[in-house]
Image (cartoon, rainbow, N blue to C red; front, side, top):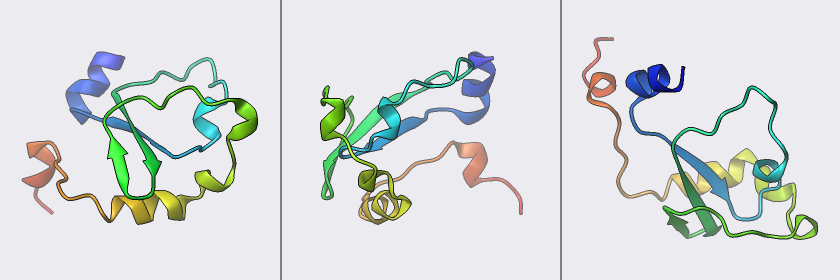
Length: 90
């Protein structure tokens, strides 16, 4: 199943914004992490690296807000997509 997804979707990243608590909550049993993690330690920087361990009492719900992710994504300088996405007929 994972290989089939990778064949269709290509490369993918798991984005984690600052101290978002949700990525630290245990996933559902059928959940599988696919791809590489990218962590934003602050609003102006994205690292292609896993977030360091942060104590659960230092994580927060405020960093899970979609607006935080959206605002930081708008500052990304280079975005790529699989060729079949960029050449698909509309």
